[in-house]
Amino acid sequence: MKVWLPIIAALILAGCFSARDGADKAAKKVAEANAAIATNRNQQLDRAATFIHGTQKALAAETNKSPAIGLAYDLNSRAATIIGSPRYEDGIAIDAAVRGALSGIAEQQLKAAEILARLDGQVVSLQKRMDTLQGKRVDAEESRDAKLAQYAEEADFGRKVKRWLWIGGLSLAGLVVAPFVLQIVSLMFPAFAPLTQVFAGILTIPFKMLFKAVPVAANAAGVVSRETHEKVEEVALQTTAAIEYLKSKNREAYNSDLRPALLSATNEVSQDTIRILKKNIKPVRV
Image (cartoon, rainbow, N blue to C red; front, side, top):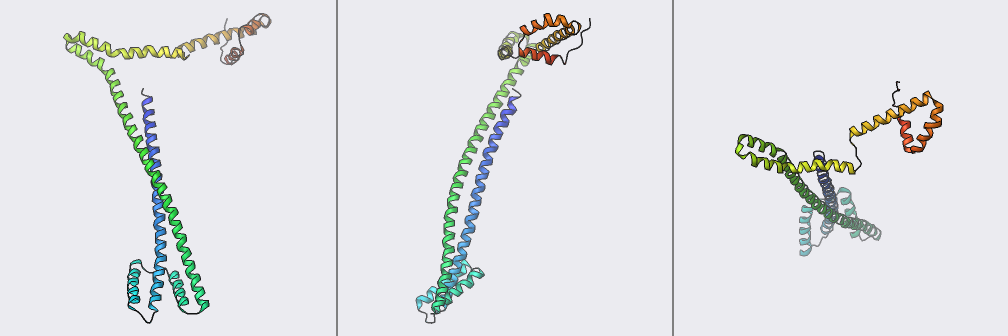
């Protein structure tokens, strides 16, 4: 029992740590997905800042401003203030696109369209990347929730097992200690001696049954005691030593009488055992 308790406790702790480790890894994947989504969103905001900057340049180029254009310019200025300036290279690119588009020159207008198409491609690529990242985040969150639920179940099971181990250990300790306590009570209060002896006898019944069951189980499993094994080994060594003594003293008698009898009475396993025992025998003194 003392050997199995640490093993059971170790298995419970290993299971809990394994489930917790899985939950931590799943939570880490969720955090990584959130970080990637945040990066993608910032990149999209950079492209939005680029288009807002271009819109501001285009509205500023209008010389005959109507109230609607004036309002659009003011609203776009507010958006630019909120979202911030574009990256330097993006700002230069959108400025060139606005100038080319408003120049009235076909070649420059074509180049402006190419710049805008390249910026549009970047936005589309970022949006597709965002869809992929959001799908990965959903999968990671589902995995995290499943791992956390598994960890909670295993932790609850571990608490129940530990509680029963404590109950079993305390009960076993009580069965061990109770007979001694009853003996002390019977000595202190002789009038209760018959009653305490009865209770002590009842409490020792499980141990008596266990002590009787252990030898029976050992015999059923084919297990022999160390003392029995040593006695059998001693007899085998002495017998082998006697055979070797006769073999050395009268080889002819050994070959004609004893050797055929040994080969007939033993199998290959026994013969191999005799060969092994020869290495450990002590010389016979007559």
